Image 1 (cartoon, one colour):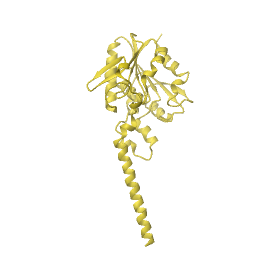
Image 2 (image 1 turned 90 degrees about the vertical axis):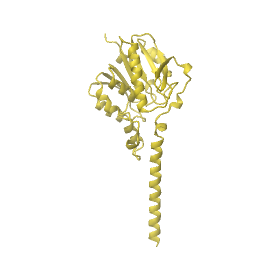
Image 3 (image 1 turned 120 degrees about the horizontal axis):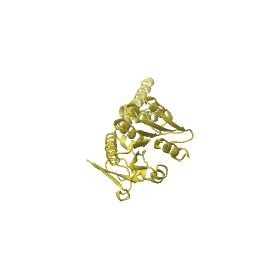
Image 4 (image 1 turned 30 degrees about the horizontal axis):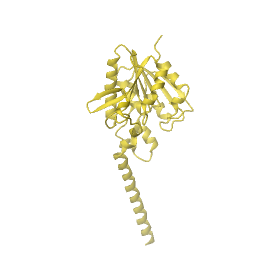
Amino acid sequence: MAERRVRRVVMWLVGLAVVAYLGLCSLLYLQQRRLIYYPQFTRVAPAQTDFAFQRPDAVLRGWVVNPGRQDAVLYFGGNAEAVEANRDVFAQWLPSRTVYLVAHRGYGASDGEPSEAALLADALAVYDDIARRHPDGDVAVIGRSLGSGVATHVASERPVRHLVLVTPFDSLAAVAQSHYPVFPVRLLLKDRYDSAARLPGYGGNLLVLRAGRDTVVPPAHTDRLLASFKGRARVVDFPRAGHDDLSTDPAYWPAIRDFLAPAA
C-alpha cells in the first residue's frame, strides 16, 4: 500500500510538472513579442523628431544628421536603444555623410507595433526613400544588435555597398535558445531574424564589430553569422567590451569611419 501511495504521489508530481512546463511554454508563445521588444524605454514625442516617413499603416519618425551630403548612412538601432542619442557622435565621426536615425515602428516616436515582418518591410521602404534622396551617392547601412538583423535583410535585398554590423547574431531563434535551453524556443518563436540565412545573399563590403564579453549576443553567434558570409569581412574585435558598452571603446568609431571613408 505504501508503495502505491508513493507511486501515485510521484505520478501526480510528474503530471503537475508537465502541466506547469506546458503552461510556461504557452505563456512564452503568447507573450513572446513582449519579451523580445522593449520600445517602452525609447518613446519620445513626435515633435522632437525631424524626419518622418509614411507607411500604409504607420508613420516612422527619426532624426537626420549632417543634411545635404551626397553620401548617406541608414542606421538601425538595437533593442531599447534611443537612436537619437547617437546624433552627436555620428555628426563628429561621419561628417561627410547624411545620417538617418529612424526608430523602428513602436520605438521612439514611430507608430505601430513591432514585429519582424513589419520591421523588415519598413526598412526596405525607408532605404528606397533614402536612395532616391541620394541618387548619386552611396547609402551605407549600419545595424546594431536587433538592428543587425534588419540591416542584414536590407543588404541582402538592395544594392548596399557598405554594411556595418555591430554585435550581430546568426539568428534570434538561436540566441534565444541559448538563453532558455529548457524550452523549445526554436519551435515557439515567430520572429526569427535569420541573418545567417540572409547574409549569403549580400555581395558588398562587410564590417563586423564583435564584443568579447557580450552576454546578450555571445560571440559564438557572431562567429556563426560570419561563417555564413561568402565574401571577406573586416572584423574588429573588442575583447574587453560587453554588449552595451562596445561603442565607448576608443577604437569603435574610428573603425566605422575608416570603413566608410571614400575611396581615394
